Image (tube, rainbow, N blue to C red):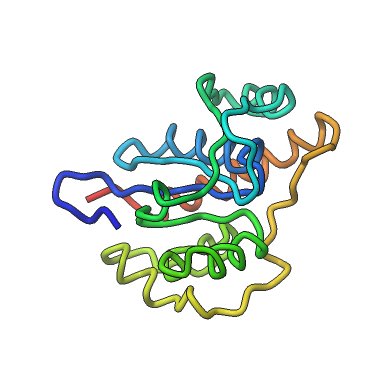
Length: 175
């Protein structure tokens, strides 16, 4: 974890291919939470690919862009994040298997929006959730628009827009 004085907290957005959900959520978060550092990664990635046109169009519809995005596999560079925001239960399970040292800082976006206490140091708020062992539910999935039509990507972007706005409010200003 960062936690060092003067170093902005890092939030890593995690999906499968780092091509749609995590890309959109990271860009939305970066736009709204300037005191934080945001990165994106995936659990099963072909490194260095740009986002799809459907992802780009969905983001543009909300006034968000990330023209320099390239897909990145979650690894040691991401494991130091203060918070890992997963897009579905399978991503949390993947972190628990492959990066157990990060499990206590990893949760789905829907769970964070529902359960994250709004006050106190982030590390303490995350610890209060017992994230390394909490049972993950199917309700926690942000539906993957992959292989869908533009309308599916737009719907995903709209869902993420609401969830990310709530997360930013809950996290509050970076200290």
